[in-house]
Image (cartoon, rainbow over all chains, first blue to last red; front, side):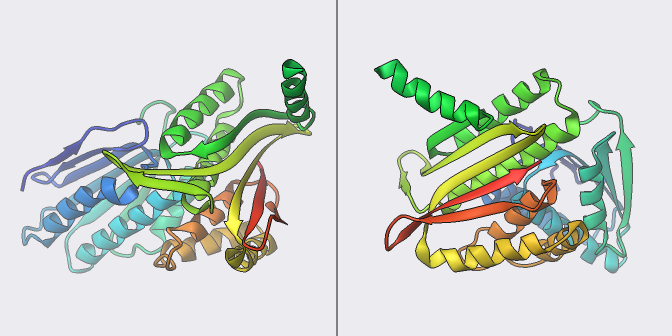
Length: 132
Length: 183
């Protein structure tokens, strides 16, 4: 399946889904003017990928600097999709990056990790300015 | 006369500690531009990074609440859908604390439900707000809400004190709603 690459803007994240290697990444800011319009194609691609029978391990790097509450709902949906394939045996790891001193971003990562039992979720502290 | 009138408005804002204000029709484009200006201004003023992030997060949620729920709006589709909603947003300093106040018209029918949500949020402590956020993250949005509940929780979560709100009845159909958040 073709990879999905959406360049970031001031208010939408960079999406880099390399489906062949299982390496998925979202980075930057997320407060789109219309969440459904922006994330629609992301969901379509991800859903199709997760439905494939190949069980390439997935590593999802979440490198967001800021996301609004509507985007938080979207992230929750993405994590639930990942959890359901992990539950049936596909190895999935999520790395939640947050900048030094960004306690709220770390806490939000903890919020999301609560429901993940089969996805290997880890928090990673990174220096200010290294993501985005 | 002209300068005097507007100087009076400016003085009134200054007296309230307001450094930034916008009143009129808001759109997602205006939210973006004002938000960027706000972040740049705070960064130049050496505001610490966590405060900048909190102010910005509250600003975005409040602006989006107005854009989505103001009872005074014009919509239409020219080349793309337009949603312009009337409201106001002000940011200021009070006893070394940044505050953000937003105001917009709401329908009187919506007042009880909004009041109930805000009172519930006010009754929760920090841990309670966190738990409520986690719960709502997993909930499907209520009909017609477009995610209002989680937006208000996000605001309460970033605030340093319980959020303040008030309603001022305008007529049989509408009230002016104000929300004040201290960071």
